[in-house]
Length: 340
Ligand SMILES: C[C@H](O)CC(=O)C(=O)O
Ligand SMILES: [Mn+2]
Image 1 (cartoon, rainbow, N blue to C red):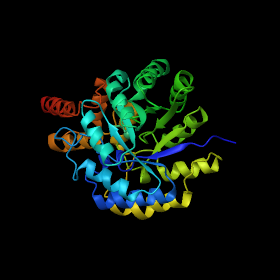
Image 2 (tube, rainbow, N blue to C red):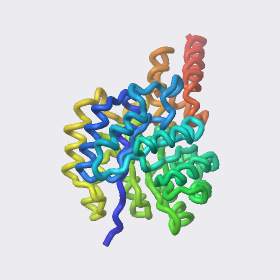
Image 3 (tube, rainbow, N blue to C red):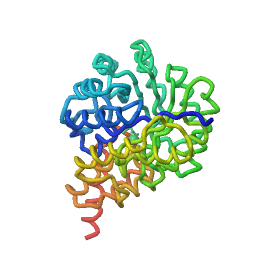
Image 4 (cartoon, protein in one colour):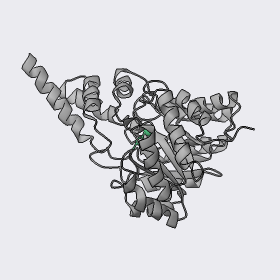
């Protein structure tokens, strides 16, 4: 009998990037209702950059995060509501407020080399009685063994699962496989391992299957792929694919398809798509949530978004350095001016 995996749906968190953080309470209720009915066990609801993300640098939320969390909790009958927190952006106080609103899973995200900044947040989440998940972002930037050491820091700090997060959609098959195997070897006897994929090179689902085959037990998706860059591994495709592979997810395929088609698709202005900018993100290893920031800078300074993203990848910028996108756009604009 193949081990069951748990799908966490991140439409209402990673999808927030693609929606420029404009989710309404009505949309949140509709998505949670449909996912909960389909049997999805964990639903993540937060600003794209986590609790406290609503800001000038990252983009302001239309509605208060904690209010959206409370609405999600109210709507769910069996699903747990998860929140994302990037230490420094979100605080322990933000986590307490989300917990008071009914969130029961804390997902603490750091850049892949910075796991130690998550320790007080894991401790606080455990004190609150929350389930804990660690998120090692931009996991392509370091090798499997180094990544496993960072996962060890999170587990020692209280994480019950650590994710390989392919924030740039840059991991190509074996790259994902090796990182999952390294984490399973290092922490697998004490904690679970998860995988969060992006579609910039259209490998989110394939990488998720390889992750499961190499021991990952938690897999992220988003309905209609709604997420940063070219989007996330689509939840409905993951569920259908795992069913065909005989891997139990506990999610009803028809329910997931209906949630994507009937609930999410009607409110999308733009379907996540592997266009030139998003593919460049996967190719050059750029944080997926930089896409809309680069598109805005491209329009403002008259330079192509994909050129900005290529330079951002070469410079190795990480989440939190959104302002450098403007700097890169200005440099490109100046170079063009000189050339003409
Ligand atoms: C804050 C990021 O959007 C987290 C995430 O989903 C990723 O790195 O990918
Ligand atoms: Mn993501």
